[in-house]
Length: 530
Image (tube, rainbow, N blue to C red; front, side, top):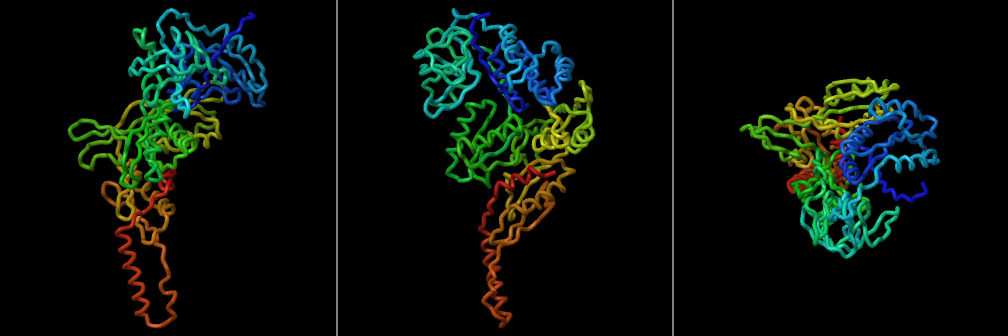
């Protein structure tokens, strides 16, 4: 129509662990493009995210991408979008982002179908912080969507939930690179920096308003995400604690779904107990800490939140197995269960069913969703799918299966804590909770793996798996030995015996004061248990 339009696009991740980041982005938008891979079809994450967009009341445009691939099946994808999601097949646009096919038509459809921001210039300033990051020069950089009013440089603003006041130092828009501007008004998406020193002061979901003419009520923020997977993070060197704390705080600024609090371990010293939305979320946080902040970490085995039924009938939540009350102080351990949906080709049903059975899962439902694809529903203990389930699912289905899950509550189970003792001392950081029926097998496998990864000391180290105060498996890491008889050429046997006894006494004394170094491989051994 000869007019110029400005489009603000936010790319969101597809994985179920990042649904909070998707919901944050949707709150700043008027519409969403539902992009489906023409070769892969509708996947589990596609459905989870489209429901988030529908709940947010957004206009949705279905788009089928990668139609240039030889394996593309656009007609089948259209049928799946109509049957599974309920959007008309005729509304689907066929594009190839690689060679530009269909992109002009998509831009026209965006302008035609997605509503422009409502005109609220005359109302008091309200801006939603939907993301933020830390810049070593500018400090906290907040990504904002101005819903009403205007925000200008040197203006005094404040956060409506925490009451933080600051002066706007700079404003800008993403074009797509940051471009400084003097003001942002109703409908604009941009960034703001202020005189903010503490990274925790201006949180994602905060509403910014003018200090002199504040708005009467804040924008609906986000439902605070609740972490479901926990692990301990400890610096390799004791003097790295402060660096780790600063790195975690800066990371949390950009990733509001990540939680951490100080923790101590008898084996690993001072560190942090960290909470995540899933295992991929945990792996990415760990990788970012090591790559962006150059922090050397020891990470403990991930755990879920267990609900402990005490003798008086009350319940206590435990996210760290080493904090489990002593045996005899509780009746039951309740573990979280999830409803797991697996989208896969028809021929993968058998192998996937077998995998879920190994993970103590119960089959609930099976539906055909067009073509040769099915969706199977199971109920599975959450602790059994957080470690290696996703990798094994991809392996069993030759990469074609995808999954989504939602927590459905807690169920009592026959569970015990499996502890590891090295040289007679329990290592709290290696404890984890297992089904009582599997405790012996898990203990035996873990002990044999730990025997391989724990380095030899100058004294023997006993590796024991302990459940309910009883040793269920044991192995010994042999000591490094100097050949004290090397200088004896034949001669009296009592001389040799005396040298051996002297070495034995020295090793015994060393054993009493010796500490065993625990490498990161020891924690990885727990993850690789079948």
